[in-house]
Amino acid sequence: MLLISLCLPGFLLAQQSTGLSPLDSQVSRFLEEARNTWSDMNVPYQDGKILYSLVLKGRFQNILEIGTSTGHSTIWLAWAASKTGGRVTTIEIDQERYEKALANFKKAGLASFIEARLGDAHQLVPRLRGSYDFIFCDADKDWYLQYFLDLEAKISPGGCFTAHNVLWRYDPHIKKFLDYIKGNPGFRTHIEKGSGEGISVSCRVEK
Ligand SMILES: C[S@@+](CC[C@H](N)C(=O)[O-])C[C@H]1O[C@@H](n2cnc3c(N)ncnc32)[C@H](O)[C@@H]1O
Image (cartoon, rainbow, N blue to C red; front, top):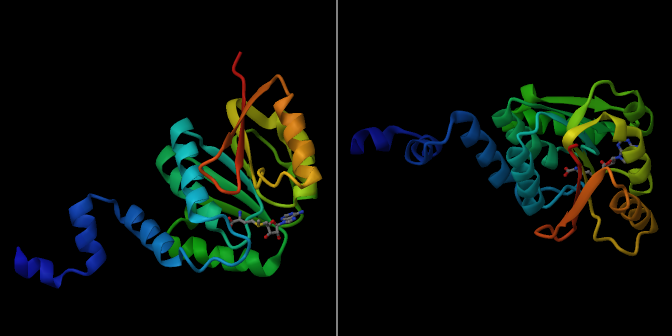
């Protein structure tokens, strides 16, 4: 046993002792190694964990993200989707960040769970077909309310619209979005405060 252990690479040993699947090992290794390297307005590690837990808890499958950047939050969402039988569609307007994100999805082993679109979400979002049960909005703050209005009818019962940076109370666009969504009787909203930036979670009330 000692001889076998000496011949195995470190991550396989970790896998043996933790019972992680090969995909889990690859993703968690990627996220740990990249943890302090994100520099493109990416969500903090803690916020990624919150998104991951929300998707797993709700067993969400049809996931949409607005604002991919280089893919940190997408990777957490897609990791959860790999366990719920789901997929993530994500939209980014900046070509360089979009290309870096594609490379990160491959490195993390999650490319097959992600459909990445390059384009302006102002135009792409209203044209999306089908319905979503988890939406993460992390692009231009002045459009948060409009993204919600464009997607409201496509959120399935029990599905949730989440938005990042909602603790930016000085931002009038965030305030307008929060006031609207908190007053919407079709949705129940709370703020995940484990996130220093604040993630609002607004879930469609099931009738
Ligand atoms: C805060 S960053 C997203 C960080 C990302 N969620 C992460 O954790 O890695 C916001 C991103 O939204 C993109 N963005 C801004 N306006 C956009 C638009 N109209 N359509 C698509 N993407 C947009 C920006 O280019 C930027 O990369």
